[in-house]
Image (cartoon, rainbow, N blue to C red; front, side):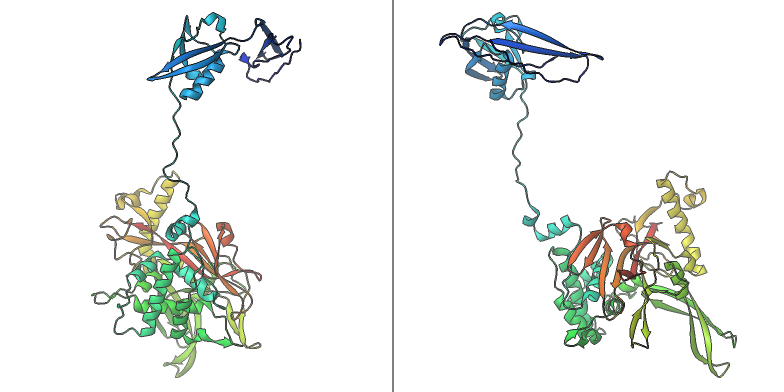
Length: 548
């Protein structure tokens, strides 16, 4: 007689486990007889040496007996269920599992003497031909097919595809229009500007607004709307045509091809047009949306050392200038240089021209602070704009408190203390008792929303989302980077512009014309210059605010 042994290794200590299964040794002596042996292998592993136990059982030298029974389970009766008495009861339970869905370990089959065990001997169980057995047990939950099949992104409506992507579409380059594309992508990231444009209607042109400005505003609104709803790149043909009609300098040709233009000039001209069109007609207060969002109030002191004359003036601008020199290595240093200047003008006291020194301070902050790196200058030798490649670092978080006037600083102190306390709470630090008690601790940090005035406070509070009624949104002088417009190349009339924009989900996207590319935040601050790679030309920061 021949034996075939199957073994498996069991690593659970101190437990005996059934490892072998029914092994048949088929060696027929004639057509009526079959001789079989069943080998059970039990394996027990202790801390030192595994021990094998062999248990042999003989089965009568005869053909296996087949029984037919019926099984009642709950309200169902399964008739003509066969039992092979040469197999252990576990095999029978597997048959019932196929019929009822009740796993063998949950099955309780009533037989003579109690419950049917997995390794019982059929000869001692006493099951008879045609007997009716009772089974109890809970079936596995049937996995239902989903009501809706899998939906692929390509099959979703285009607006849902945009939401799934987490960023808007790119813009086709229509021929040296990367300066325009990058400008549009940066301004498109300002939700308050998009909201104002949505409210602007085709018939909303006021009498003092020229037709081309109206057309450019409508084209901007339609382009923003198309970017929000499209997954595929958008061709800004209508916007480009109206932009060239409004500002003919963008129509310059060289050898029959449209020339590269300055993105900062496009940015400034577009904001100027929108500032004229996005006013609130008919209201007692003529709200300038663009000024509220981007306008910076400067208070300047002008004095002449030669004559002793001194005067002051205020002015509004849409951006601060970061002047670059050998001493400037960081954005903050460049901003300080940009707020100081020399000018030559006629002196009434001297009766001739004299040198005046102008020193400016920020007297009113916007919700979105735009900073231009003054990288281009006119080079007489080559008769063209040259580029300063010097590396100037800029931060993800910018604090302009020390660039503000004394009056504005006093107004910022309260909100700044509240902001520090709120950030300290997140870190588990105890809040300043004086500042927290001044407002009864009822303070909420928000994004910059609402109309801000020169004092850095919101003139519209109750209507702002996320700001409780009766409270005001106050600026703190601290800003977070949300967009960077870069230039690659050595001349303003050539090279390539790209927009790097922070999305609402916190992720950064590089908009290289029609190709949006995800980027890491740590790579954004590396666009600081020092070579021929992309370097920051315009940075846009969003105000960090608190509601009081």
